[in-house]
Length: 82
Image: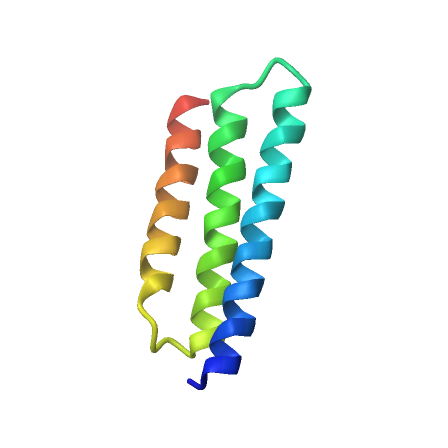
Protein backbone atom coordinates (compact mmCIF):
# COMPACT_ATOMS: atom_id res chain seq x y z
CA UNK A 1 0.00 0.00 0.00
CA UNK A 2 1.49 3.33 -0.93
CA UNK A 3 1.59 6.19 1.54
CA UNK A 4 -1.04 8.28 -0.23
CA UNK A 5 -3.57 5.44 -0.13
CA UNK A 6 -2.76 4.83 3.54
CA UNK A 7 -3.23 8.52 4.32
CA UNK A 8 -6.63 8.57 2.61
CA UNK A 9 -7.79 5.48 4.47
CA UNK A 10 -6.60 6.88 7.80
CA UNK A 11 -8.50 10.07 7.09
CA UNK A 12 -11.69 8.11 6.41
CA UNK A 13 -11.32 6.03 9.57
CA UNK A 14 -10.72 9.18 11.61
CA UNK A 15 -13.77 10.85 10.06
CA UNK A 16 -15.85 7.82 10.96
CA UNK A 17 -14.58 8.01 14.54
CA UNK A 18 -15.61 11.68 14.76
CA UNK A 19 -19.07 10.78 13.47
CA UNK A 20 -19.26 8.17 16.22
CA UNK A 21 -18.31 10.80 18.80
CA UNK A 22 -20.99 13.09 17.38
CA UNK A 23 -23.57 10.32 17.76
CA UNK A 24 -22.53 9.85 21.39
CA UNK A 25 -22.84 13.58 22.05
CA UNK A 26 -26.33 13.56 20.54
CA UNK A 27 -27.27 10.65 22.79
CA UNK A 28 -25.84 12.43 25.85
CA UNK A 29 -27.80 15.59 25.00
CA UNK A 30 -31.08 13.64 25.02
CA UNK A 31 -31.36 11.90 28.39
CA UNK A 32 -31.99 9.32 29.61
CA UNK A 33 -29.10 7.47 28.00
CA UNK A 34 -29.62 3.74 28.29
CA UNK A 35 -26.53 1.53 28.45
CA UNK A 36 -28.01 -0.63 25.69
CA UNK A 37 -28.18 2.36 23.33
CA UNK A 38 -24.60 3.30 24.15
CA UNK A 39 -23.35 -0.23 23.43
CA UNK A 40 -25.30 -0.44 20.17
CA UNK A 41 -23.90 2.89 18.99
CA UNK A 42 -20.31 1.98 19.84
CA UNK A 43 -20.76 -1.47 18.32
CA UNK A 44 -22.04 0.00 15.08
CA UNK A 45 -19.16 2.46 14.85
CA UNK A 46 -16.54 -0.25 15.46
CA UNK A 47 -18.15 -2.60 12.94
CA UNK A 48 -18.11 0.21 10.38
CA UNK A 49 -14.42 0.75 11.18
CA UNK A 50 -13.75 -2.95 10.67
CA UNK A 51 -15.50 -3.03 7.32
CA UNK A 52 -13.64 0.08 6.17
CA UNK A 53 -10.29 -1.33 7.32
CA UNK A 54 -10.99 -4.70 5.69
CA UNK A 55 -12.00 -3.16 2.39
CA UNK A 56 -9.36 -0.46 2.36
CA UNK A 57 -6.45 -2.80 3.06
CA UNK A 58 -7.94 -5.78 1.20
CA UNK A 59 -7.44 -7.81 4.37
CA UNK A 60 -3.69 -7.21 4.58
CA UNK A 61 -3.83 -4.97 7.66
CA UNK A 62 -5.13 -6.97 10.59
CA UNK A 63 -6.77 -4.04 12.39
CA UNK A 64 -10.11 -5.11 10.91
CA UNK A 65 -10.09 -8.16 13.18
CA UNK A 66 -9.82 -6.02 16.31
CA UNK A 67 -12.42 -3.51 15.10
CA UNK A 68 -14.94 -6.21 14.22
CA UNK A 69 -14.31 -8.11 17.47
CA UNK A 70 -14.87 -4.98 19.57
CA UNK A 71 -17.98 -4.12 17.59
CA UNK A 72 -19.47 -7.58 17.95
CA UNK A 73 -18.66 -7.71 21.68
CA UNK A 74 -20.38 -4.34 22.16
CA UNK A 75 -23.47 -5.57 20.28
CA UNK A 76 -23.58 -8.78 22.31
CA UNK A 77 -23.23 -6.73 25.50
CA UNK A 78 -26.15 -4.56 24.36
CA UNK A 79 -28.23 -7.71 23.84
CA UNK A 80 -27.39 -8.96 27.35
CA UNK A 81 -28.14 -5.59 28.96
CA UNK A 82 -31.55 -5.27 27.29
